[in-house]
Image (cartoon, rainbow, N blue to C red):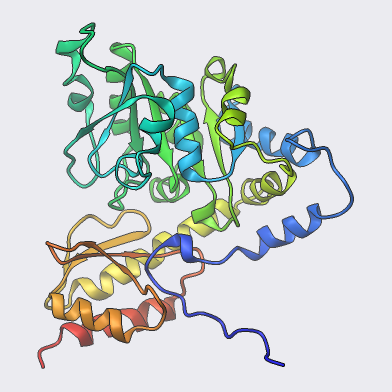
Length: 354
């Protein structure tokens, strides 16, 4: 009889590849006793909803869902009508990595803008105004920003406020794709409410999976009137869990203390350590500011190929841009300093002259 499988090596491909935080597993085990009401009519969900109010604002409404794409699609559907549009960057997850789900399932059009380091600005909000009221043009209704961005950068509080002010002046709403919102809050040393509700954001897709959960995200409406019909939206879009207590118990573990912040701070610190270690290496160019838990770098293609072959694990990291020889290295809540140092040494060896 074979024993348990040997532990897989930790890599730098994605924070999605990290395991589940032990405190989250403990919360799941504690919730797994006896029977409880289904579809969110349970004590764990009630406590999770209270924690969303504690962290995002006393009037917010928070709804647990299964995954990030589901959170984005459901939020967009709640905020738009089928002839309306969402302004986002050309690297936004909902544009690049959700297989067209927002457009297919909500009927809305994504209006993309070229970005610098993954960010858009107030001027990007205004560029479609000339065709406001034109029946041939999808009408901008929502501005969606990603915090932290797909390129590992972070919107400052002032930048988010400026975008929200520009959007609201034009009668638009602001959505935050916050799959890594915890990392952004840790980087800014600010509470979650400061990045969202207090900055003028209207709705948030709040991530848990990348910060140590088994699965689970939340849609948080900073303006409660926007959530009046969301229970129906969540059900229609297949994001209502029957055994909701097991999603909610994870958020109780994450937000009930400082687990969300501790894990995000650690992942960010490991990214800074990695960038510092490889940034001084000849042949390695850091391509975006390292502000959250991601490091983007350009290095010679032979070095990339060597690392992909020689490093342990099926996907030790991803090539972000094949043409530019740019890679993405992600750190997670369970990345260790030893992981970083060993990886940095491997990078240095790969780019060293033969």
